[in-house]
Length: 468
Image (tube, rainbow, N blue to C red; front, top):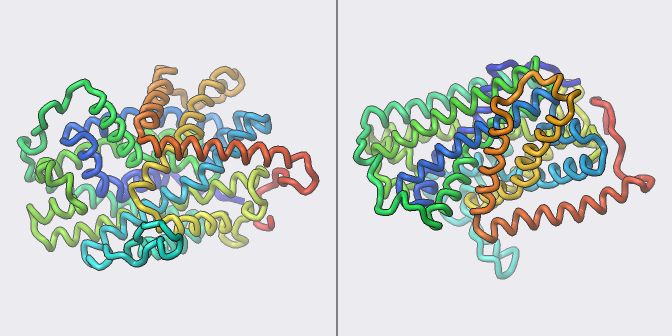
């Protein structure tokens, strides 16, 4: 059986390490480019508000239905084995198998890109996919292959008892706090308001171009905020989950929002936004300018440490999703097993780790946008609608130990924020999201029909390290 060994400190460290990771260190140039100036920082502010509003949604669902599996568990607890419940659970696992490993891989790819600060040869092409798929001109740099190795290492680190993994998570979290703290302190000490608040002409015009740019900035910000709910995936391993998980979510959102806004302003107060927008190592470039190359190299090592923490956190949480769905009979029973000595879902961990290794071969920018659009409709919008649903059930409301303030305003704000991100994405990214959803619906209809056929999908089983 899974053991409840994670306390508030481990829960917060897990969430924050997942949220910070390498994201802000590689996306600051991209977010500035979305609106062509530092006014794109509005995306960070709006992102913090949407993350907080959506955090209330996660808090309420985790309070009502504490358990492992995150969104999958919430759908299962709220809708049961009704057709709606079966569809939502299936579609969540469906999109997760495509988006989850991609999200984990962004940390490993970002780590490898910063490693190229020391070894420029990593930026060179290892091979071109055209050699395998005729007509496909897509070069794969050496740092992508390094990312595959990083994912393998992280999988080995996560392959252990949960209390040992929790202690390791705290160590990695402390390293992350030191990294962002150094960047912020250096930026504040050398801050130039004239650089940070020099806006281009028409920066705040109410135009379609600025609205689209703000949507793209919000999308990048939300990618960087992803993870405020990570502890929800390990609910069965958390002490007093109905209280601990909501507290960890809110602490994580508020703390990371303060870190992001302060760090971004610190960097823009040192580097002109025109220069920062073109940088591939923006934090290292800032440090090199004000302290020197040796300090920049040491900071790069700390950013690599932070990326490792993020990747570890993501894998640890997401590896519980196939396990939870396999227990409920919506995934092959083979993955419902736990380690006979370590009491952790080792087969599910190896599955997600392996898929993450494959995902490291993809392009980072495309991965970020694709993973967002593929999960917005099923996961985030689906959860918001589920909160509205459970609020109509007195027996569920009666046991809530957390209720979002000013309901339903935070839920509505989160819904509008996510739909704004989806609607302002590029057409091919929207097509990817809708197409993967449509394909999932087709597969679900076929899968659901097999439930009545002997030898079809297996029924729910008990948690056991003897499952096969």
